Length: 160
Image 1 (tube, one colour):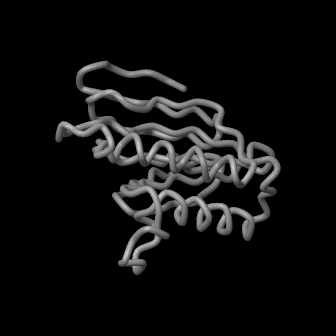
Image 2 (cartoon, one colour):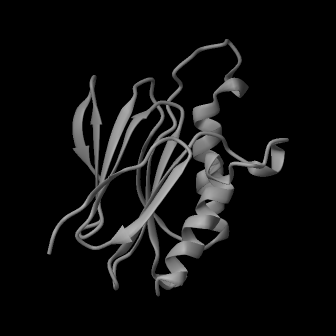
């Protein structure tokens, strides 16, 4: 079986099968969300940049937003035979890349909070996370094992 590598850019989503690897580069305040149904080996990776489509005036790109991207990913996985009750998630990113003096302006923390809230609403357990800090990340998601590899120029490589 041939292993495919798919790159997921900002405001994109990929859903694929067991042997494949999904990669997203350049996470700063953005959050990478991996979803997986381990029983049938289907997984998804989304790269979101904003917390909520509900608060946005521009709703033309729903994959930009944590809440709507997760809903879309789950729908696509369900169409492929996944069961929502078996889905599990891991997340990375949400760094505070810029300081504006007001902690309420930390879009990275807002993104992480929105992702966690949506996963909880959808009863999808968050198995692990690597979020916050002030450093960028690259994420490699291996669907077959469910391992998320996080690379950072400053902190090296870790697996969750």
